[in-house]
Amino acid sequence: MKAKERLIVALDVDTMEEVEYLVKELKDEIGMFKVGLQLYTSMGNDIISYIKEKGGKVFLDLKLHDIPNTVSETVRVLTKSGVDMMNVHSQGGYEMMKLAKETSIKTALELGMKPPMLIAVTILTSLGDTEVAEIGYIKSAKEMVEKLGILTDKAGLDGVVCSPLEAGLIKNVCHDGFITVTPGVRPVGGDVGDQKRITTPGQAIKGGSTYIVVGRPITKSENVKEAARKIVVEMEGI
View 1 (cartoon, rainbow, N blue to C red):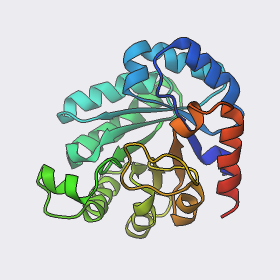
View 2 (view 1 turned 90 degrees about the vertical axis):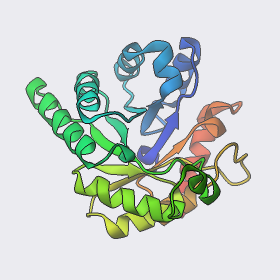
View 3 (view 1 turned 180 degrees about the vertical axis):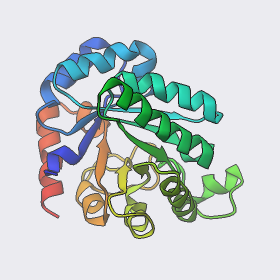
View 4 (view 1 turned 135 degrees about the vertical axis):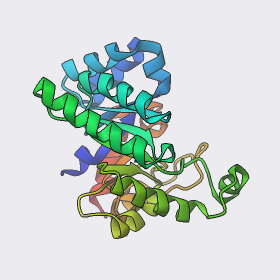
């Protein structure tokens, strides 16, 4: 992939005006738009249709986590929407993930379409070792990412969401072609916000990230197109 195809921009907004502006400015500069809970709650599948109609790709970031049947049925509906990538929570367990993947493939085949990439969230990048311990895990954040990554691979999914600090680790313990989608990426000198386990775009790609997710450093900049281009240049300069 070209560097720009590996850049996912998080559309963490909730108005159509903001979406229209960002999609218009960025659809030819990046690989995919991330639609998360904020935007999906505001606009539902209409926002997926809009982005696809404008020629963009969609990573639907809803982090599905429920009993296997509920997640499976939700994945079935979302596959029909034509998203290019979606995710579940690995902490939902092996059976949940396995059934979700099987349902996505079956639904896509029935519709004659390409199934979306299905990936699983490991440990949120807003959590460090202290927060992981507060939840009750005995292992460190890094150890939990490794454990959950292996479980996700075993369940047949396409990859995981992890911090860029763990992307190389995942590539070492999972099969070839297993992808890593890494939020927690900030350009050199950028505000870290609420992220704990972070790197720069160049460090993320060098460390093994397949895709990087960037939101506010692009969407809140005065010139979003230029901000995206600078990050792509940084990714190319590893």
